[in-house]
Amino acid sequence: MREIFISGGPVMYPLLLCSMMVLTVVIDRLIFWVRVDLNRNRPLVDEILELSRKGDWEAVRTRTQQNRDYVVRILVTGILHREFSMTKAMESAAADEIRRMRRFMGVLDTMITVAPLLGILGTVTGIISSFEMLGSTGIEHPQAVTAGIAQALITTAAGLGIAILSVFPYNYFNSRVDRASLNIEKYATSLEIVYEKIVYTNGTARGEE
Image (cartoon, rainbow, N blue to C red; front, side, top):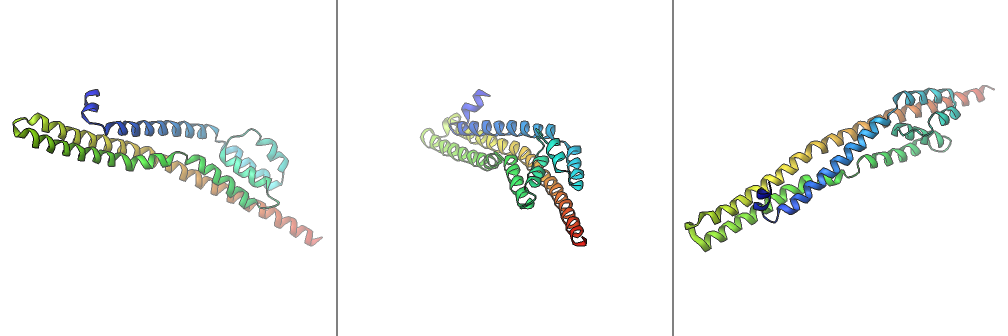
């Protein structure tokens, strides 16, 4: 591997940096999503909706203390601001959660584009080097020419390999964010409907009195 790396020429160094950045981001995001899954508490989310139907806000506060489920955090934010603007409060909290989930995704997206371009750059410099060697040594020394061609092929393969291996985690993490967004929308809408029913019921009761 060391010989192949050296044969790839100077472009292999930025490609190595790209691969390290990709690996770091992938590990970071994997740990993040494992923690998200461990912190999920779907029964508690359903319990919050049930308590909200009863208007038992104090029980909601008690049950959700120290909870790290992102859906619970968003619902609690909406409940805390229910008398002012529940919807906007949950939208703001949801935006913060989605921003956390999309952290470093731009790095993966950039590496998917930059790595092949660096590979092409290495290809061009390798071919240029081959022609320079061909012009100075002639066809009597083919080893000098093939070194430049090898450099061109190695950098291209390395750049494409980094990009290909980045696409799979990038798409996976994006799909996780999309599913989380749907979950947030589903439960936030349910809470809004529950609260609107409470407001409507209370308003009707006062009107009858």
